[in-house]
Length: 68
Image (cartoon, rainbow, N blue to C red; front, side, top):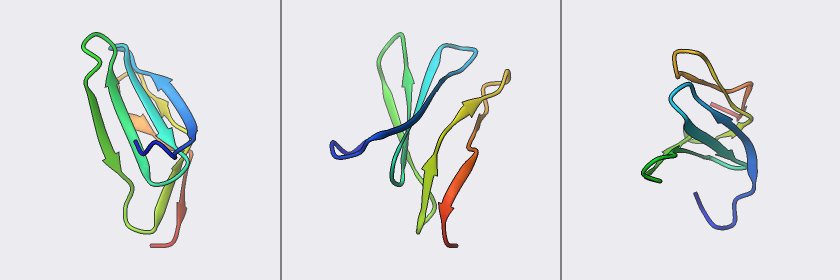
């Protein structure tokens, strides 16, 4: 995630994967064992805010701001 981003949400999945959203258009998945980071971008013109992970490991966002 960009160094200028501020955290907007974080959640731990059932497999101990850490999911983090930034105030802006990025989200990251962190493997807590290897510390590998996978980044994801929101659709064009949208922003993530908040996150939760269900028992199946699927990430959910209470809000996806923006137009589009």
